Image (cartoon, rainbow, N blue to C red; front, top):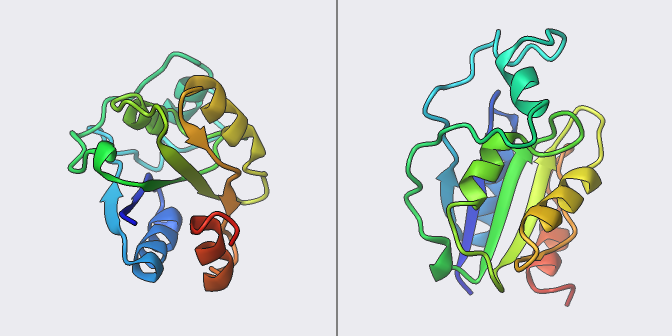
Length: 157
């Protein structure tokens, strides 16, 4: 089974989780990189005019990203990781996923969060990509249970 772990990380937390997941699963790893890197000011969720606030308030916003290295069509399973912003995935993740034909593709979201659930982002991803097989997500805040992760990849077996 060929696995890709792709992720967006603004502060490094999701990157650490994604790197560990790729190691556990012997998977390829790809960072979703915005063309314009987020600064601390951009990420100030308390400022209604910060870049991240403006993006999250616009359903149609798709921040420009660097060209992905991997083509998702060659993978059996794609884990897509991100921090939770305003109860969903950052818009930059939508930019990434919309570059590919996800029909029939098995996608497993995973997220890091200071206190929000991953369920809102999973619902949103399913609505945006109805032809993909987007599974229940994994909220990975407090370490990785290798057995749980392998079961998820193997379809609960």
